[in-house]
Length: 493
Image (cartoon, rainbow, N blue to C red; front, side, top):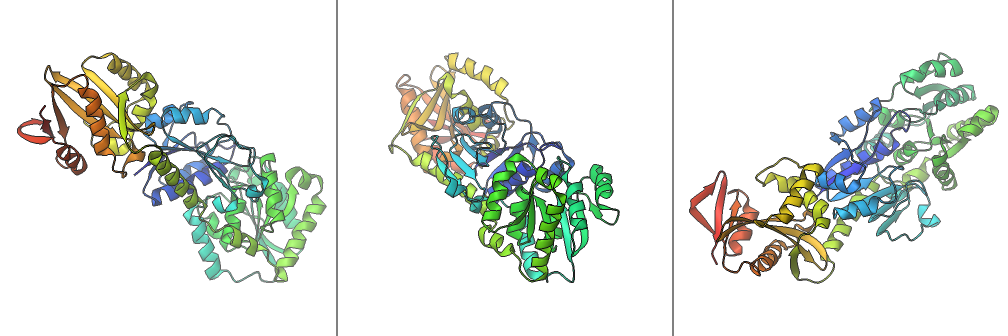
């Protein structure tokens, strides 16, 4: 099992689009057997509800992503945040973790081990070669929540088409930070052929919506049942952000509005690919309300005439993008471990290994079989690590395969003729048959300076993997010795 930390924020000002994508990736990671936490600030009510519904633990994030990876014991750091700088890759690599990064064209662009740009036609636009590893481009990598796929199935099973008029659902983002819901609701209410108009918006915007569109508009607060409501709608008018791709996946005819500048490229691509129709950018709509009304009326007439354009979205957005992203992580990690020579060698640990070793130590699986199961903070570890490197009664080695760190072996002096050995395998190196090689390499490096000492290991009786490792390496259980819950295994000189 690999531990993943997702770096993402959600606020009333910035909306919840990044968080929606993060929740989708988290779900796919869990389905693949990984554990996940969310690191960042989730301030909006809808954001907190989304995180809670996904059962995502939210933790604070230090500025240094390497420290974040180390403190969380995360093998993968997935970033969905425009504000994280270009030094993210160096920070994460200092902890030996893998950086996965979401970008939208040039927004959020940074070097990473796995780069994802899931905007429509990103694969045709290209991307500068900046030294990134795996680059996933195009709408097939758009992360979709399980709820989106369920809504897709619901629409296929239950939606029967519009009646005499077309009912419209308006959603301008979970927080409607631009106040666009009132403008768009008024446009829809004025369009011929429109039946009911339902607006999904935070309650603080309801008076503005009623003032612009009238009192017969139905108002609902953003909630978890939005996707079901959308699945059974005749037409949805949406901001051209994350929701637009969810609607395409569900198969709902949509009219898009680019409410902020970073949505413009996605808006134009969605229209050119036939995935959606558009009303314009928000400034354009406000500057030409009659023109916006005409575009809504044209869409309504098409739907009433049986000419839906939703098939393009259904064909292009299958809802499996998050699974493809998580699969790319696994391939990148496997390639990293397999790279280089087959042999494992050990070297003395240095100050540069501090974040790396803390990450391995804080990995949830490692903590579960350690003497202390609590996570260790970067501040506490840094002081401890400096003392270890200077302590003559402790020796710490890093095992590498082809120059890639795959584990650490630590030796603690119990007396002039006995040292205790402990081993931590890099989480990404598990399952590759490297544990015995790492232990052997550490022992060989240690015995170069201590040829005549007895080595002992303290192992929990139910830690079958460690029992097999040490017994297979020549260690024998001493029935006369025990350290609390730990059995003592001895390897004589």
